[in-house]
Length: 236
Ligand code: ADP
Ligand code: UDP
Image (cartoon, rainbow, N blue to C red; front, top):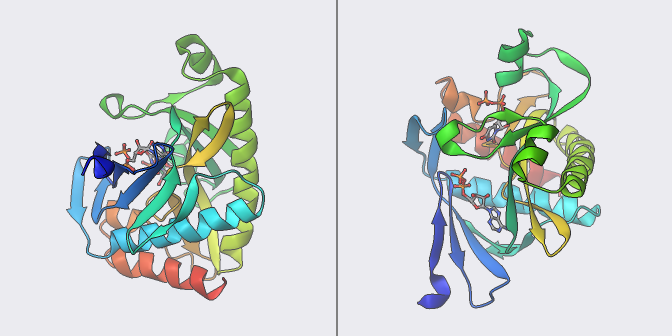
């Protein structure tokens, strides 16, 4: 049993130890949360789609030279991943104005940004994951400068690669969030890439195929996640 010790339960996933101290099992739950956990629901199948979508996208990035934590799928809803020492920052990349950027800067949702925008947020639920800049990161000692440099370089590469991958599936990558961790000195992409953490719009109709369907009570949440999975699968 000690090999299956639960190390952490978050809003969307449960992390378990494995027999190998350098590897973790990451279970994707059917829970959906928004607004820092204030809105919560369960959707049968969400864990399945998110695990499968993360596996497809992490394998793709890995094959294009991005170091990721992904090792392999374990059944329907779990991934075997490299254990990382997580950096307490979220990197958000944006190609089109939406969500908090549209609100903060008074931009119309859907405005195409003349160049991608990269932002850092301090990962802290109690504070609602505040937006921070590099001087905050230095002053608080959350990560070394070279590590943040590498995270931003990787985020830029990931943005280009994912935009291409989604475009081939008829999807526009509006924005997304990444988390990184360290294995020794190496900066590695961790966590998930799913419709929970990306805004994805249908390329021809602009229909939202992501967590905004849940945030905004648009209905068809699971159908949208299934559609993203189906389109990615057809391109593999
Ligand atoms: P939250 O903590 O935001 O509620 P989740 O429910 O997604 O998020 O929990 C997953 C947790 O696992 C997150 O804290 C994330 O930073 C962490 N994590 C992701 N990948 C790895 C990894 N490879 N090694 C260690 N921890 C990881
Ligand atoms: N995001 C995320 N986790 C967070 C915050 C944001 O996955 O804790 C994703 C979100 O789904 C979107 C992008 O990052 O794809 C930008 O989110 P934004 O800052 O616009 O916040 P929101 O308005 O979505 O809360």
